[in-house]
Amino acid sequence: MFWKKEKKDVFKNPFYNEKDALVVYIRCNKCGSVMEKRILKSRDFVVSYDGNAALVIDKLYVCDKCYNQIKIDAGFKRNYKPVYFEIDGGSFISKEEYEKRKEDEK
Image (cartoon, rainbow, N blue to C red; front, side, top):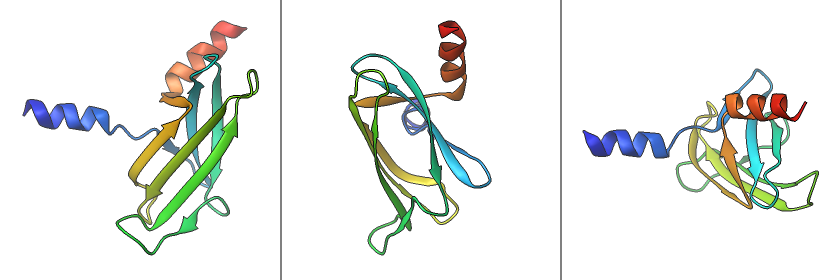
């Protein structure tokens, strides 16, 4: 039982599904700046014929404040449920954490 809970927490889905996009909230590892990024369902996904993922993304974002590169690689099922995801140069944060950080900046 302990291991199941541990594994579930590690694989928490960082993508918030909206009608025309997936929204992801990220923090830059270099300066700590937070960002909200939209991944459009109509043009940002590529169909994959290999492995478990039917759709894949390979996105590169640049931090507005320090110009650090943040790369997201992810694979999804056809219903936009993630099969795998990884981030380099940043970390995923929750929508609540993003909103709190933005409110603190004001």
